[in-house]
Structure formats: C-alpha cells, structure tokens
Image (cartoon, rainbow, N blue to C red; front, top):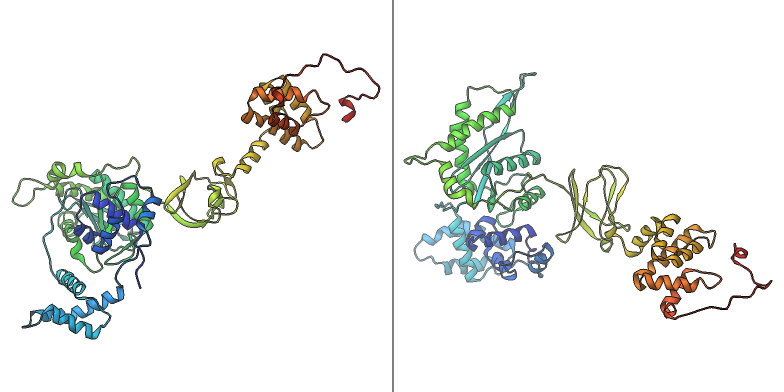
Length: 511
C-alpha cells in the first residue's frame, strides 16, 4: 500500500531550501524526507518561480502523488540489517549473497538495487560521526538545557526552577540563552521571538529537538510540526526541521552549546541569589555577552567577530512585529455564509460561494483569517461582541446586496436621488411613493426605477418619466417598458388640450 503525500509545510520547506541553494542530499538530511520524494516534488514544481499561491502550489505538488515504498517493508529490511549487516566483514560474504538470503525470508522484499541502496544508507547512519561544514545564516539549532537554575520566591521562600532555552548559529558559534517558566507553547513562542531579536534576523532553517510543543509526531522521514511552528515559519520566512528520534548527534552543536552554558553562565552565577525570573535573565544576559566576546582558543577572534563579519548579513530581515501565535480551528461555512467562533459566539462572513465547505480559521485578539485549500478567502478584525455578526458586502450574493441597499433608503433619500436626475423623474418618484398603502413595496419600485439609469443613463430615464407622466398612472413596469422599446427617444407634442368633460376624473379619484 502506498503512503500518503507529504504535508504542504514540508513541500514549502523543500522548495525554500532548494531556492537557497541547498543540495538535495543536504535537504534529505535536514528534513528526513526520502531522496526520491524530494526529487519527485522538485520535478513537479518550477523552483525558480516564487509567485505560486498556496492553492497553485498544492495543485502542482499533489498531482495524485503517493510515496513509492512501504514503511512496514522498509522496517523489516532494517531489522534484517541489524542481524546480518555485520556479516559482510566475514570471508566470502557479499551483498548479493545477503540479498539472496533476504529473499528467502522475505519473498516480497526489495530488488537488488534497492537492497544495496538501503544497506548503504543503513551503514552510513549506524554509529558513525562526521565533520559537518555549515553555511552562514543557514541554520539555528535550538534545545532546552537539562539542568535548571532557580530563583527564590520572596513571599514563600520556595525555590522555583526554570527552563533554559539555548540556541546557536553553527557557523559563527554565536550562542543565545533565555530562562522561561515552562516549555509550553506560550513560553516557546517567547523564546523564538527573543532568540531572533538577539540574532537580528532569521535563518533558512530552525533545527529543534522533538519537543512536544514543537513536534506533533516525531519521525525519521516526515516529522509533523505543531500549528505554532508552522505559523512562526510563515511569519519569519523560515522553515522548521526536527532531529531524528533518539539521535542527539543531529544537533551536536547545540548539545555542545548547552555544556558551554553550564561552564560560562551557570558556574559564574552559582553564588548569586535571584528573587525573580526577570533578575535571573538579566544576570544570564550579562554573562552571555562576556561568553560571546571571549576569543576562541588559539585565536584572537570571538563568536561576535565571526557573526558580524560573515553571518549577520546573510540572515533574513525580521518583520516589524514579533510573532504571535493564532488559534486554529476547522469549521464548516454555514448556510448564511458565516463561520462562528464559539468563544464569544460571534459570526464572521466568507464569500457565499464557500457555503458548506470546510475551512481553516486562524484567529487571535486582533484578527480573524479564513483559509480554504491553503488560500486565504477572508480576513476580519476580531470583535468582542457576543452573538453578533460581522459581514462584508462583497461576501454577499448579489440579491442580498440589493436587499441591503434597498433597506438603506427612505422616502426623503429616494426623492433627493430622483431630483438629481431631473424634474420629471422627481415627479414620477413622488407619484410612485404615494401609489399604494404598502410603503415597503413603494420603496422597492422607486428604487428599481432609479436603478434603470445605470443601464440606460440619466437622460433617457428623464425622458421616459416625461412620457410616462402623460398617462393617468405611473409605475416601474411602465417606465421600464418605455426604455426597453425606445419610446423615450420618439418626439411627441401635444398642442390640443384635453376638453373638459364630466366623465374625466383626476388622480384624486384614485387615492
């Protein structure tokens, strides 16, 4: 059975890394996505084009894509390698021999070329280490320190231990640390904001451990990140990557940075007593500046020196505002083309074409954004009123827009608009508004007559009203028929007055 396509966030991450000039082999290492999958998605999408909308990108990437190999079969192969791979060192044992023995146990197993490929990958990743070369501005590694400092509550005397967030730019070695109360989403967001403000820019990738508040589902091949990380990546123009489960060597630099923090920050502050987390962070920051200014061993240059000289300019500029995570919910657009946030039961409109569709709603205390198929279809300012509606006119179907427009009129306004067209139109409007006892119907008829000038122009409407006034009654249908038949364009004169007669009645008789 084939696997599901990778998530959209991983597709974006692959494209971003490719645009940054990262080789496919390095993309595979960072993302944990297989080489074949990376090549497949890159072949479907024009990497040089960065004007893709989210919907266009999804259409291009998910062209009935499925992954090629079976996870269970691959795991069985790795189990076989754990038992047999070491036998290659024995006399006469070859890869082809191992493959034949493998097919005896697994008749539906891999072919010889795939067997050799996975064997090579297994050997490469089995308890080996290698020196990695890093690119300026390419990556930030982050982690939480295992040992926790504390401060003393002045009122209770209780020791309150803190989590210490640690990060490093691997190329220059510039280190950052910050103490927070927990590793929960709100504190992790604060750490990311403080870290990027300290560095003065964002990298191409942020590599983190498999924290529960950062990674929903750890995976060697396709880790799934939390909504907060996805939003932060969009906000700062970066991508998130996670280490393989139980593979601390993937972030060896930040592991080393944690030990440096113990030596150069924890130790100098071991005799200090703090009464708040703010005071603790201030003291840690002063020691952090000293650490980053300290020259490397056997050189006169410090972390700050290499950062300012070679890495600072390669970081991407930060947006004006710090990142603030939005809550995310999946909702169905109701028949009244609104979605409801149940926190205060407020309704927000979306274009009426999406009635019945499942949409993703992101919101905070400032804005509400609605997405369908990775494309934003509506945005509103957040309102605090309960059981109320926020509706944009452009989201309404045409007949609802007309009804709203009609409800906005009154007798005085209609007569004022008719007078702007001409005297005959004004007289016709006055007669129509007095035509029956149903005021609402009179408003609709008069409004409809005024709308005719959009199609025929004010001059023709004025002429049509002049002709209609010659009759004994006047209504919307009569004026519309005159315009449709072009009778308003015909010259007419009436020099002969109507003779007085006892059978002739005036308009007063029809009140």
